[in-house]
Each structure stands twice: as structure tokens, then as C-alpha cells.
Length: 140
Image (cartoon, rainbow, N blue to C red; front, side, top):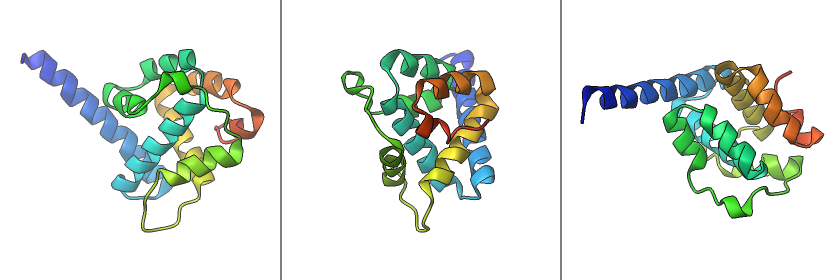
């Protein structure tokens, strides 16, 4: 494998750590729980979006985060019609932690971190696709 290919892997690993570290700091949680929270919110969001928007969002993510995002995805089942309670319940189900975490706060924290790394315009487009009751979880 060439040195350039290794640099790509090192870069995506570094970017993934930046996302997890930012979420750890934003949500005041350890990195393992931050990873679980990121994964759970990404999967829940992915499953709620139509396939073209999933592909568009996936293209904006760092390579390793993109792999987490697409892990286990079934495009033929998308989009799932989840109301706010179901959306938050799926997030809670994806996080196994020794402490009780509020899924609404977790979603808001993940979307804040995503907004930081992707930019407000990208997340605004995604939020605009979702029903207003879920859109309220996104940063202004």
C-alpha cells in the first residue's frame, strides 16, 4: 500500500476522533458513549431520510464516519415514518450507557457537532426534509 493510501486512512481516523472528541466535550460524556451516541443518531437520521438525501448527507461525512452512517442500512426500507417520540426512542435504544441519557439532549448535541463540522447550510437542508417536530432537535 502506498504512503498516500495510508495518509487517507490516518486522515479519516483523525477526523473521526475529532467528531467523537467534539461530541464528548459538547455532551460531557466519555468517548465510548459519544461514539455510541453519534452512531445511534446517525442511524436514526439515516433511516428517517429518503435515499437520495441519505446519499447526499453521506457524501459530506468523513470516510470513517460515512462507514458508521451506512452500516446496516437497508435503502428499500427508507424512509421510515418516525414521529418525534419514535425518533428519540430509537436513539435511546442505540445507546448503552451506565448512566441515563436523555435522547433529546443526545440528538441536539450530535446535531450541534454535525453543524460545526458540516456547516449550517448542510444541516439546514437535511432538517428541512424532516417534519417540524423532529426539526426542533436541530440547531438554529
